[in-house]
Image: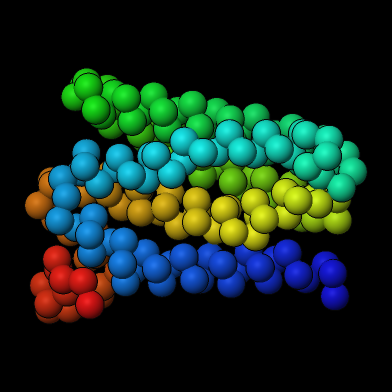
Length: 181
């Protein structure tokens, strides 16, 4: 049974964060420009340095497999630094800001997929100790926000709603734009 607890937590938390995003976050982001909408999401990802805890003796029950812990920790640190850089460039209205957001989002997404894959392949769940909450709660939120960031980046202009990415019919997209229900 223990082999299924972490993947089940990951799945159910991702589902919950998807619903939170659909019902509460995306409607608010729809009323913002691309640059405004990216900033709170980048701030959230600036906390990715917490992944360094996978290397901290005392935070984990026992030393985690190197194939999981080192890439996960360093990938999270890189994502955190890129999020800070992208945020600063957006706030300064510098031209390369969106390019850095793309770089951050690709690196951050690939890092999370690699960490989950390596965690499963190396059975890292058993030794996580206090860091168990990172893949149980934090990773699902990050995965969902990476998806939202991709949708924001793919907006052709600031006037097109990212909510249309969740709606299949144009009538539904028009009816739901800008309203929080």
